[in-house]
Image 1 (cartoon, rainbow, N blue to C red):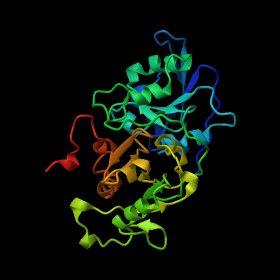
Image 2 (image 1 turned 90 degrees about the vertical axis):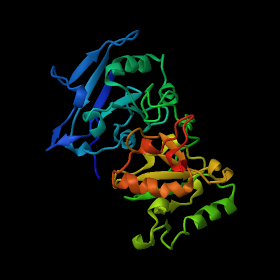
Image 3 (image 1 turned 135 degrees about the vertical axis):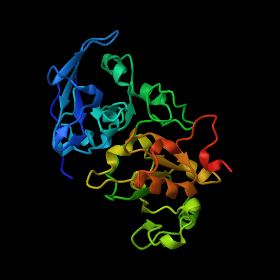
Length: 311
């Protein structure tokens, strides 16, 4: 998928990018601006922030993680951008994207608070890490859906990482290389990888137990991804195909008896995580692929037993 480059921004200007189109026409949801191309907001305690709305049908379906790669040479004058996707159009919150600290990760922000939050970010009184740390289980800043039992890490990437393989399925990416036996045991539990590097690709649908759905994923076993943090993942997923999910096998995977995987959100709040037993990963991929469930349905809420542990 080839996407147009984003325009340059001036100081104090934040891009609002439409990624949802109806018959080629941009849909802005609650961020409509009848006055023109942008709206000057004066946030509490900050200076004016100009929202510059931009639309191009070439961005239809664009994910937040792919936005940093479309910035012009030299990057963005603002450390963030706003993305209006289908979720924002149909009653949800717009997506605020990090363009500076860990480019490509995102947090949902209530539209009526957007001006104040942007002003604080541009004024330096609020950092994107603060937004991530205060996300609820749905990926909304200071939302009311409960605190995640496993908050998304805010550690910056230790170095640059290569792009992940192109696939319209799922990826299982090894990020810890200190337990070879544990890695082999994980692959064996998933049925083993075939000659093309896939686990679960040969599963017979007639023999599948729907309560224990096998994971079908392309395995990425490359030391180049050692230490890859979840927040950096969305920007590494190529836009050529709509990858369903990226699951990380990190140090926690090999330390836990249930070999928990770290699933990374690529759509609702890029970089948000769900930590779940490896046996549940197949069900997650299947339900996301058919839009039967949302990513946040697998995010464990602090103090609440996960639904998959219920009798």
